[in-house]
Length: 184
Image (cartoon, rainbow, N blue to C red; front, side):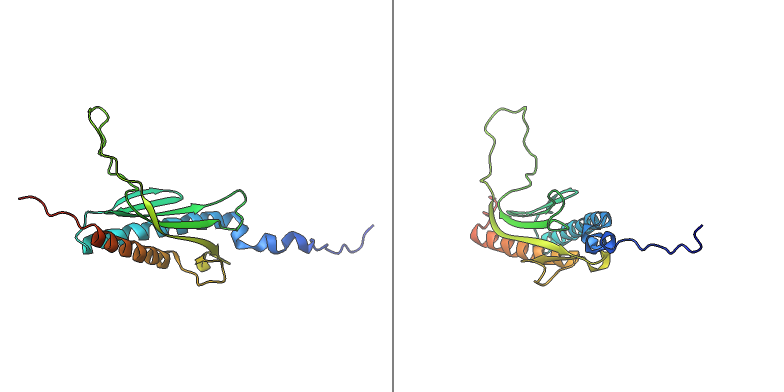
């Protein structure tokens, strides 16, 4: 008979860095989805504000779980949260691109009508940034351009950074191609 049974500690490797790394956890996936949604909603709100300040038409937006497209007049911003296989690097990458041209068409194509349809020129990338994630917990989620050793941005801060680039591209596009005055 056993008088005293000493508890056996589980092996430390079972609870090592791979187990405790927040970004490799299932919880981080839902946090990542919430952070991307926060980023996309901030981008849409800032684009609407930019359109109002510039007396431009309201932006055209397309949102999906891992993608956001904001078309502001002659320029557009696309943001995609790219995840590969087992998310190496953990948390995936975020790709933000500013385009000169139309990404989100207005959908005015009517297939029942005959005649030539005006096809806009293909968009051209004018700015691009790839970001990685760092987070030890939900509250410390940051997007980093050029690796985690660079300055990190919260989702609202990153939205402002991207909108500053979009605003600059918008102003450049209007300066380079001013719209013709309407005929009286």
